[in-house]
Image (cartoon, rainbow, N blue to C red; front, side):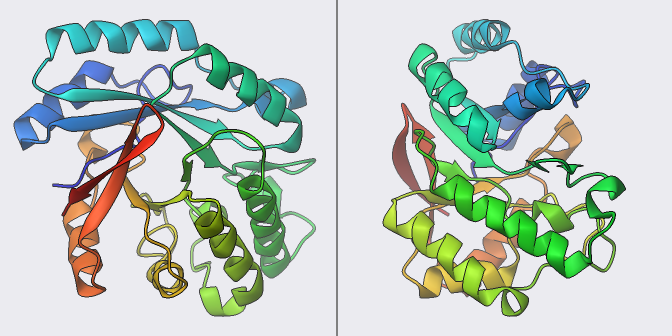
Length: 264
């Protein structure tokens, strides 16, 4: 089993799962580390979307209680920040206030277009232009001045597009820019196995992961992006087989915002 560090519970707006159910699943699986990464999309507050941000005080308290009664599994306190330029100062403030083990920096929305999840995002634009606009936002996000560790689910824009696989060859220049920024900044590329209805095998897909490795990228983390316990460790076996086939023998998780390598 891989160490899953992208999990959402009822503390996130889009999940009803009890966090203790994930912990129990990890224990049953024989995995001794598990990482939560509840949503905090400050852009939803600014843009007026009907999305509640996570109650971070409740979140911290909930995990503290779980840690007290589950000494045989390490429970990591992560967060997934939805990137927008105006949110950076808010995220810096929250990082200073809360002792997150790691921060996932993800792009979900673009100004004036909303979340890539919705069909509305693609209205008035070609699929190619929409994908390029999303990748431009990802490039901006990886250059952002806040202490994040992991770049989340590159290719999210294609997750809910049937037949809309995001391929390296179609956007090689900007994807190379993104990957090089991740590498030079010492950040970690997330391998996300929630692909929705797309034709991607993973997010990012195998061609982008292979290019990251070719460019010298080393830091990789695993995330199922589960919103219910049945998706914990989603397709981790398939991911593990792929990684071994391309010569990857270790992945990373973060504790106190420091990388910890483990063998797969």
